Image 1 (cartoon, one colour):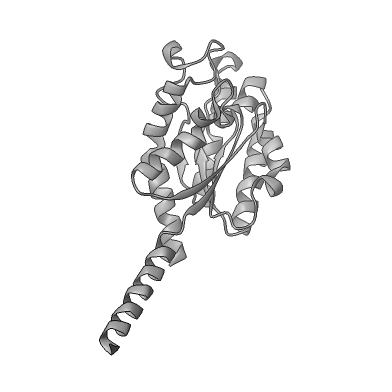
Image 2 (cartoon, one colour; image 1 turned 180 degrees about the vertical axis):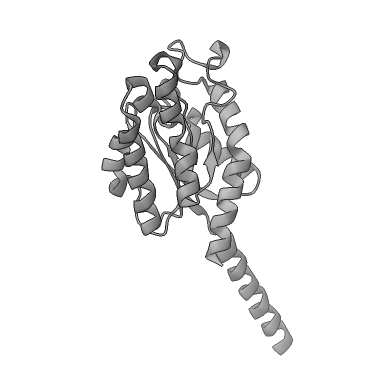
Length: 211
């Protein structure tokens, strides 16, 4: 009887340890229409498809889509506190496309993203940056100033960077909606597939810090 009770106790402790180890990682995707899923069904948006892909690999996440169509980096900064609730483990920052499309001064974009990263790190929330590239119509000088923002901040703050969020999808008519800007559901699948290794590494770092 005593052995049976002891075995039950050991199994209970093991189950509790496993439950603690597999507690879902709470992620927020702070973004614009590219993550909000403009023109797509809710389940086709980037955060939802990313969550499904992670779950298929046995990685449990609590994913919040904090994408707002039309948002700039300054808009994301202004809503940061209510978009990223306490208890969040990590934030994937997908902002900047609207800054580039509107030709906003790259220094304004840099300042807003800097503030976002600083404030999240001050709250002990892990950050992953998704880079964006400026369209060619504003010229080489603008593009150089804008495109350097993301690698510069990743290096300065020691945060992971996925260099270009739309890698493999941008400028491919078959993978974009009629506006030529927003990915189709198939385009989102490609984005998810390409970014997965970076997100897995990001979640792995968060899990390590929990220990």
